[in-house]
Each structure stands twice: as C-alpha cells, then as structure tokens.
Image 1: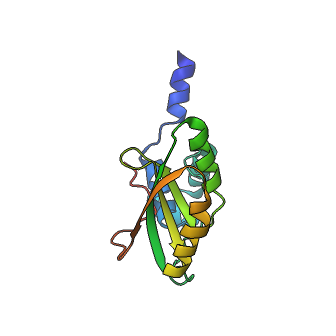
Image 2 (image 1 turned 60 degrees about the horizontal axis):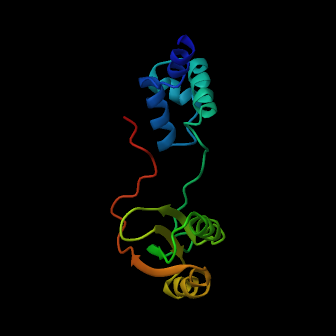
Image 3 (image 1 turned 180 degrees about the vertical axis):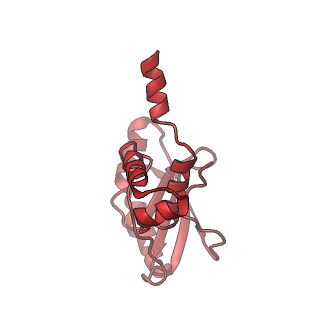
Length: 163
C-alpha cells in the first residue's frame, strides 16, 4: 500500500510545478534563474523540479514556434476525412500513410460524422489542390474529404491551461 501511495505522490504536481510549466510553455527559452526569480525560489530546487518534470514526461520537448506566413505558408486548411472501411488494419494504414506528408501538421482520429481531422499548411490554393489531388487522393480507402479554409485565426495558443 505504501508503494502505491509513494508512486502517486511522486506524480502529483503542486502549485510550483504548475507555475514552472506555465512559464516554460509561454517562453521555452526562459532560464532557470528567471523562473526562480519569478517564483521567489532559488535556482537549485527549480532546476531539480524541471528535470523531474522532464523525466516524468510532463515536458515532452522544447521547440521554436514559427510564423507560418513568414515561412511562406499562407493557407491553413482543416480537412475532414471519412474512410470506406473502419477495421483496425485500415485505420492503422491511414494513420501510417498520413505521416509521410509534410503538409499535414496535425492529424486526429475523431468521433462524429468524419473519421479524421487533419490540419494542413500550404503555400497557396494551387499547392493545396496539388496536395489534395496527388497525395491525399492517392491513399487507399478514402471515401470522402471535406476541406475548410481558415479565413482568420481568432485564437492560436500553443500552451495548455494547466489547472
């Protein structure tokens, strides 16, 4: 019983852990010293907490978030995909195949009227049409594709609202 309790306690985040995660999500380049100053702690416990959060998988990686338009990707598309067949092998094949397309930046298996929701970036409509006609349409088992083009990004936060 004490082993289970110790394991659960090890994986419980406290207020300080949550504060560290929020700061790191908002600025991945923030230093341990800056975090310590903002939380009124010394650097050693902050460093140890960050390492613990990394080890336990709360922090998956550190990345730079690029401006897609400055990178030449003017078009953002959400694409709903319906498959003909829904057996596990067909789902896994689609999920494997969709990985090969760099235009697809996110892919979700969803419940509802469609099977998958994919997020795609393209330089322009011509490039998206090429992607749709020559790449996505080449995959087996696709029954239906519905594209929605983003006109305005109203909210685009890349961090989680940690309670």
